[in-house]
Image (tube, rainbow, N blue to C red; front, side, top):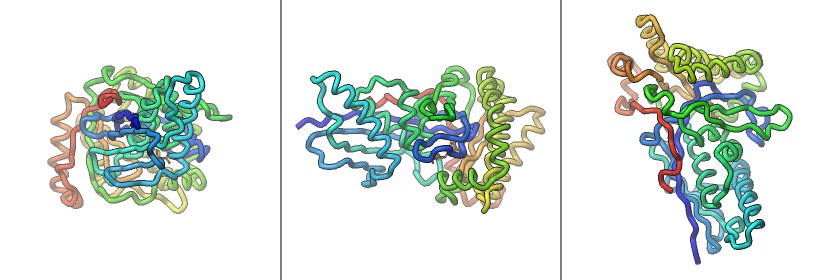
Length: 355
Ligand code: 2P0
């Protein structure tokens, strides 16, 4: 009996304009649009193989060698959508194998620690959806597939593109058009670099999903963020990317990270993701930019204390040199493994390289 399979890789993305808040929990529709940068797959990626066979007894997922449940509503939503698209193809061409009726075996592996708080769910769901779409030979483009990946994990929809990516929140009425689109490919701004500073690899304090639900429900500041701040910032950030204007891009990135952590703090009870080392990184980057007289480095923090620093290649020695020197002398940092301080290129990624 034949086993059909397809393998893909998908990258990690780091938001520079943050997604925080759902207007529909089942469909994973966001309360605001967001923008991200896709990181190089040389450093961080998920490799996923999807197989189907009439001999498989049940759907199975192996994540980093461990059998995991496929029962979550989110995973089921993705599998259901993909099977439906495949069965539509099968009904148009009866020579096609009825893969939509076979059970699936999905084997997925990250080349980075899942616990490091580095958006593993984004790469994971993007790879899962794309691997099955390849296995099923679906004709849908990446934006269409991103609508399916979004149901797995919101930020996953942005990992289907390389370079600079926007997740459009979509129509407020039904949200069917909430999808990821490319803002610019990586070749547009090849000198932009990112470094990840792993402050702690502890599991995060408040999971993103429950954290954002709490913020939507309890924060007054959040209403201001989604109605006034983000819509304008979305256009400005896109423009700063298109203009390769680091000064503007860096300022907007830092302001949005701060705005996101402010609405976390304004939630009741408050949610804290930054720790003392994170705050020292923030101060250091502002001090550096002040000394330089312009913004040459920008930080951003997700739902955890780890920093991602953006900078232009021309300033690499200055930015990374300063961080190394300073943090070798700071309490708290010595506990962090400085060998994890990694320099990552931002690059466009073709998730099909393992095809
Ligand atoms: C982002 N984060 O835009 C924001 C910034 C964390 C802070 O997307 O519930 O794992 O699966 O849709 O995508 C993390 O949330 O949440 C996230 P779900 P997700 O990257």
